[in-house]
Length: 326
Ligand code: XMP
Image 1: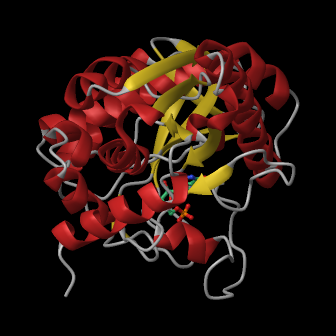
Image 2 (image 1 turned 180 degrees about the horizontal axis):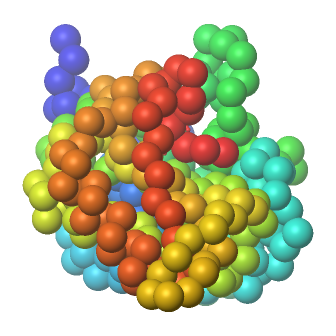
């Protein structure tokens, strides 16, 4: 029978068997999946694990701080933070195609890990060559939707499955590969991770990079980060966090529309709100959010975020729309 206790026990044994006395690196994204994967691997191999947090500049507001403080406090894990904002921005410059963006972000992630690995190896001195494993929080739906599981058609290259480069230097450890999100949350809870981490809504590895329809630039990221923070703040204030699965906030960077603010004409960008309800992200329905909450979000975003003069609501279920726009 399936219990979180059994899953933990099985996975801990499997991880010990796979990694042996070598060492592993785990990328933390700030999301539930990588946090639970890291906590599970830490339970299995303790100080043989080093977590790496890549600040790619595609994070939401406050996310980096949450990883640096809350996760470390909860697990006592060894953490290395890499500031790679410039690098990701340079790599993404001029790119608008969604799959190309995903592949670039996945590739840069791995490159940064390799660099972090080299540093961790150097710090380890003799025996550094034992740093040979990369932990990933890949879930069952990621495997299926990237075409790696049951042979289903490839829908998107989730950066932690289909987007990996072929010259990968690490062996992968994927302890959540058979689990769905709700199960991952239960495992995280059982492992003693704090509520704020375990109950976090999903956020994609490529971050805000795939929520800007068009080229990713620093200015656009800052703008989207503000809009996203406002939406999250209001949804939380309205007590809707648990009710909705997640609410991507998307910037249509290549679209402009005419508006009026004060006595002036504006020609700004639309922001899309994409609140969805779901069990496992394989299918989803658009969330029927209260109009007053939507109204507040719209007023605040258009007032507080430069260059945005329109807020629109995505009322498409999945299928036919995916949850993310890219
Ligand atoms: P889609 O857009 O395919 O999203 O309906 C399904 C779920 O997966 C999340 N998502 C990702 N998660 N890496 C991730 O770790 C990714 O590349 C990625 N792309 C989408 C999305 O937020 C939703 O919860």
